Length: 258
Length: 281
Image (cartoon, rainbow over the protein chains, first blue to last red):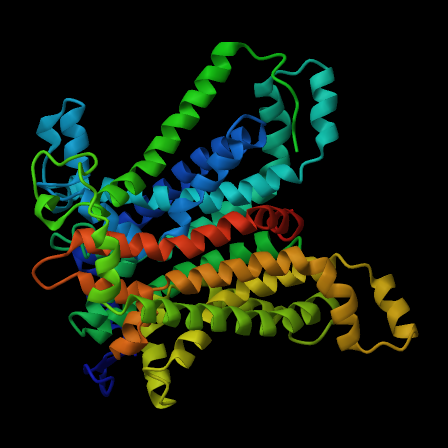
């Protein structure tokens, strides 16, 4: 399909060779969406992993109310992404939203603006929503990883007089490496493919300024019925995902299969 | 479980750590407070500046109105059918697949793996058009069966991965002894593998169920009949062309979250244990 002209009903109307790819790669919107996808994926996964690692470590220690905190942490995950995105869209409402209310209350009334109408604010906000939604799953996976670390290691190190920070740096972190790899990889795939947050909050707008490759692809295919551009984008996305797939086998299935 | 003490740790470090924890919790939970507060606002105070942090007179009626304004009970049922069906199907297919991958060395095993992984890579968006044409050709558009099958397919890679991880940990000797006793493959699977894999199965089922329950795009594309809608697309009826009824939308959303959240709370221990013993090692 990416090598032919196709009308909106899926009928082939002529062979164009690499034409779709050439026009795709000379489309500044596509290139920008590609870079934005990179920023989107890297920043969400990196920040999520750091916060989730902190949470997983703290939740491993006993304190009053731990069960409650653990339960509440799962809330963003129990909420489907569409509801999450709608909720944040309401909170970003320029006149009556909670974000405006909060920035006003803590003394920055100048920030009570149209968050989603300005790409310089909308995109970081959506990145935060992505982080917010990814934390529960990541924390759960990392907590599971920490739980399977041999307790004797900690006891021995504590007897040797190691500090909490040393325990974390010299035992938790190295022992957790394979689990971290799995969680980062899964998150990269989820976040790269993520569609609802951006689509519900801005539809990639204004004027494609918050597009990632996935929303770009969806708009080309299902809004403009530009099947050539859409399928060429699909192939590009496919190639990137294939790269992830190879990593995926190396990392996730290596331990499972011998 | 680590209960190594805080002996070597000063009070300031502890305070800082729990301060940070509290801060993250506030960031994570504030949207839910806002959700509840909006869900309890009467229509008239929705658009007011400054907004109330919490409505002075909670409009509990919103939580009644959602059941009559849209067929919410029907949407609930549809979600149960789709998510339950997809979970059952993914588990039924995933169990023998995981067993085969863990135990048999067959030609094309590697290829099969790549194939499974390949399917996990794809965002439904990329496959949407192709799926639509396929389901259309099979006359499955506008049926729950379509969503059950596609959601199960989405859940399968993770299910198979989990099962394979668990089944690989069953010692071969147990199996050999059972074969000597004259047990068939199926008996062995039921008697020896299922009990060991129970936490893994529970984890995989929870994942399948939650993903199908929260799925939106497939339901939006494949179901045009309003009577078949699950909660996710059903709730969207509060998003009008000109105005979104935020108070009702968020009230219905809260109700939709409850079963999943309760399920999570019940399964939490299992989830962590399942992930720990299964793949993430």
